[in-house]
Amino acid sequence: MKLKELEGCLQQVDVFENPKLLLEQYPTRPHIAACMLYTIHNTFGDIEDKVVADLGCGCGVLSIGAAMLGAGMCLGFDVDRDALEIFKTNTEEFELINIDMVQCDVCSIPSESLIKSVDTVIMNPPFGTKHNKGMDMVFLKTALQMARTSVYSLHKTSTREHIKKKAADWKVKVEVLAELRYDLPASYKFHKKKSVDIEVDFVRFN
Image (tube, rainbow, N blue to C red; front, side, top):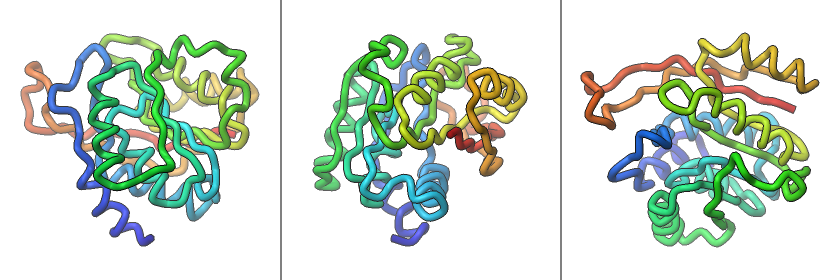
């Protein structure tokens, strides 16, 4: 599947109708999701026939894209039932059978059930800047416990040095694969602009 074809498919994925601010629900834009998945698949071979987890999966754009690229199984984890209902509808519309979803708080998955339970984790975690300070690091730590091979994640570029320090503390290799502009559309009442660009790093941990 070509990059443009993948992006075109992901543009058809339904997203949040009423996003929840406390959960920092911002959909991963189709262009960014496609670029992430295409790189993971073609450069590193970490999707095809692999068990892939998507932490904080929301409406499922990353899981759906991974499934289209031939993942053996995709597991989406999210605390929000409403988001998972949209995700379920999306998988039915695309007729994807290699996806399952789990409603749970990513921060409280029992550690004994985490250890190296999937091949690859792909995620766009809460950035933890508005309400849940440090939530991105909680997600990252959970992902690193789960993944047998690699973790791919988006993080604000402004937190890069902090993330590198944490990775060193955890004895994990870290590589910034790309700097991206996250075009964030106005989603909440306090947003004054129609959209704002946030600089984000697309990072690989292994």
